[in-house]
Amino acid sequence: MKKSQSLSKQIKLFSILCGGLLLGLPAIPMVARAQQQTTPRVNPCPSIFYAEPHNSQVAVPQGCPPNAYTRQQMKVQGQSSNSSVSTPSTPNQMQPVGGEVPSSNQSQSSKSRQSSTTIDSEDGINIQQTQSSVIQTQQPSVAMVMPTDGRVTVRLVNKTNAPVSYQAIGDTAPRTLQGKSDVVLRGLRIPATVTFHRRDSGLLMVTPQSASSQQGMLQLTLQETTDLGMDRSALRIERSGAVFLN
Image (cartoon, rainbow, N blue to C red; front, side, top):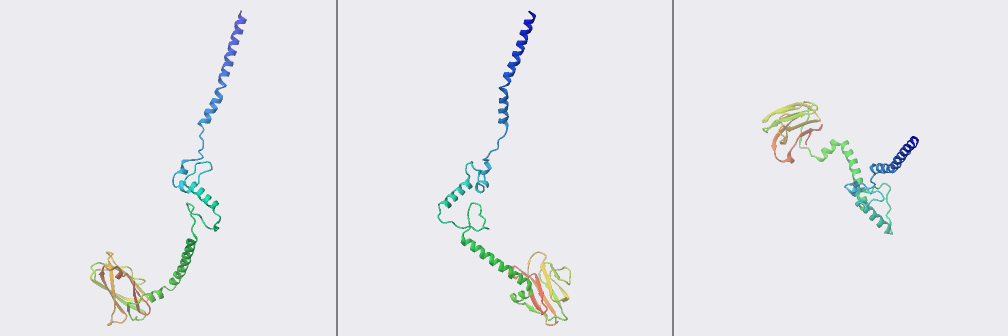
């Protein structure tokens, strides 16, 4: 009797174990499917291809709905295949965004502009090499002064009410000439350059005049003006005694 009860208990225990195994088997593929569902998939056609600027500049991957740029390329390729005459492309030519190619007239105009730019650059070098002679030929001298032993004297007369900053390059440091006053700069070595400007940023009209009573002396009268074309900021005296204003 005890043996039969023990055997019955063992059979029940074995049945419970087998039932648990049978119940666990269907759960395994369900767990696998759940893991697959939680794994993110890469979208082959992200929305960035349909937003600007990619919408009009970048082709979508194969298999994605075409965006504006892809449709334009398909249209261009269709026209090219239907055309009986093909236009040879130059090796160094870059196609702009949108598939537009410069016309032959535009290319010729571009070459012409490049040629003219090269010529202007060469002329610019020549002008820099002969700057002094070009200034003399393009701008007539405004006065003449007779140097004494290679030196001249310049008198600045400020008839404005504003202070004027001035400097004889290489001879004096920057200085200030008060309104309604004058100053004499003696023994300036030529060629000489004198710069001046109003401290209140106003315009200056400069009138040069050679002093007949004293050789080698030049007087500059500084006056107010509202004419931008009359505004001057520098004086140049060449070795010949020719006076130029800028």
